Length: 347
Image (cartoon, rainbow, N blue to C red):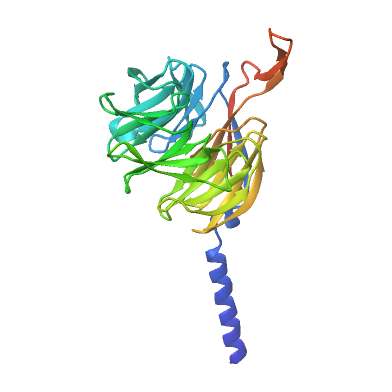
C-alpha cells in the first residue's frame, strides 16, 4: 500500500512538472519558417505588427511595405515617407503613423486604404514613433533634435515638444500608469515621461547596461527590457528604475521584444543572432536560445498571437569605393533582394 501511494505521489509530481514547463520547453526552440520576398531598393529600419488586422509594416527607404502575416505576402505600400524609420498604429481610430527622418515630419495614414491623409512637422530627424492610447496621442522621438514631438492622433495638432537630455531611441508606454519610457542612447539612461503633463519625471541610469537601443515591456510584472550596445539585455523595474537582472546578447543590438504569452524576451543583433531569454521570475532572466539569423538582420517585430518574430534582411554586396580618399564604404544591399525572415517555434 505504501509503495502504491509513493508511486501515485511520484506520478502526480511528474504530471505537475510537465504542466509547469514553459512554452519554449514544450514547443521547442525557434527556427526559420519562411522568407517573404519583398524586393526593391534602399535601406530599412523598424518593423511593426498590427495583430488585429494581421499586418506587418516594414519601413523601406521612402515607403512602407505592408505584408499580410497570415498569407505571408506583400499586399500594399504606404508611399511618400522619405527616410522612414518607424510605424505606429491606432486600430481603434483606423489610423497609422510614420516617422519620416529625412523631411522632419510624421505621416498620418488611413489603415484601410493605406493613403496618407496629412503630415505633421516634428523635431529634427524623427526616429522611433509611439501611439499612446490613454491620451490618444502620438510621440515622435527626434534623434538629432533631442526631443519628443507630441501630437493628437485624430487631428495631427502638435500639443507639446518635450526636451530630452540625450539622443532618444526606442520607447514604450504604460497606459495604466500614464508613463512613457524612452531610451537615451548617448546617456545610457531611461527617461520617464508623464503622459498627461508632457514632461520628464525622472532619468534612470541603466548600469551595467550601456547605450540602450531596443526596449520592450512586461506590463504584468512591471519590467522593462533594454537591449544595450555593450552586449547586454537589462531587466529594469519600471516603477523604481532599479536594474534587477541582465543577460549577455550579441553584437550590434537594435530591437527588443517581449512576449507575455511565453514570458520570452528577444534581442535582435547585427551580428546575425537573436538572443532569447526567459523571464523565470520578476528578478531573473535566463538565456534559453541564441538563434542564428542573418548578418545585419537587426530590426524585428513580434506577433504575440502566433509567437512568431519577423526580421528584415537582404543580400549584401562588397563595400564600394567612396569618392573622397578612396576609402571603403559600407556594403550595400543588392537591389531586389530585400526580404522578411519569419521565425517561429518548432512543433
